[in-house]
Length: 180
Ligand SMILES: Cc1cc2nc3c(=O)[nH]c(=O)nc-3n(C[C@H](O)[C@H](O)[C@H](O)COP(=O)(O)O)c2cc1C
Image (cartoon, rainbow, N blue to C red; front, side, top):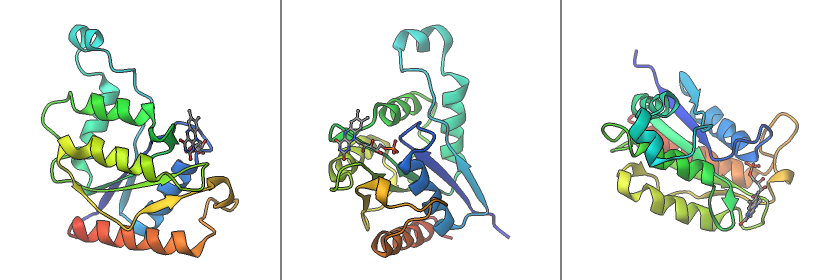
């Protein structure tokens, strides 16, 4: 039997990150045989560092995880109406690795934010950032969890049925895009 695998990426390093929680909720609905959480705690991209030492092991690990996954889900916070530096740094580093692990990869993006709009602009910005990598980026449904501090219970479950329904559909579509 084919084993399914999902890679989860949170654009926030914060331990209690709402994007991390949303990523785990997505994984629950995707229900992969193997769920791997990416570590974006990478050095800042620095061309001198790359020239002197090549691709850091942590970056290569991330690129390999993307390549190996059937599908990837990214949940990113909105920082000043755009993508977090942590997430952009990771995308830039991975673009420096051999080959392109994103090519044709089924990818779903989501956002959880403090603001009520739920990160519409960070979603749009992230979509733009992904263009050079040519993944199979799902168009929707958009999962934009606004006022995130009020949207999760103590167990990290989404409390609003509307978000839950949209997330479920997004993950069903992601599974389908991955041929699962
Ligand atoms: C530098 C910074 C910029 C932020 N900019 C926005 C913003 O533009 N829109 C918004 O809705 N929330 C903004 N926030 C609030 C974040 O959405 C909120 O802190 C969110 O919980 C961060 O995601 P996390 O819980 O996954 O760490 C900002 C927070 C920080 C630290």
